[in-house]
Image (cartoon, rainbow, N blue to C red; front, side, top):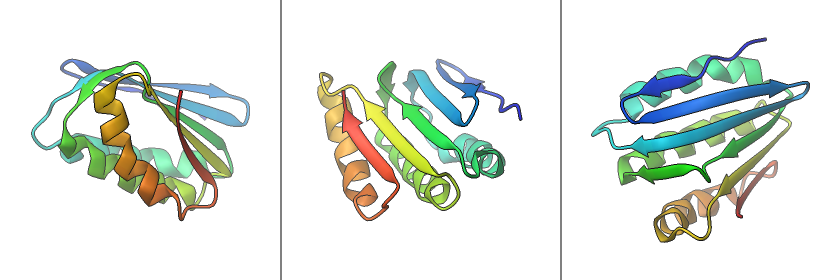
Length: 120
């Protein structure tokens, strides 16, 4: 089952489907004033295709995201945790802004048993 990526302005999401694992990679800069308008419908279309899959979400190549990008990410991870078998979220712990941005995401995900958020 093919999952399309997403490209908008200086921002891109690439999706790699390998057997039972789906890798979702973020690139560029998420600077939209209201990124939820673009991200929420994209993620909602993706959810049914993630059922019983291992999902890896990789933010390590993301250059920047504003604080408005965090709520759609949290919403997606929560929704995904209800259908995917496991979710691993990786961010670049050497980038101060990523560490600060992913701290609330990590805190929210503590209660989700099949989700791991880790700086690499």
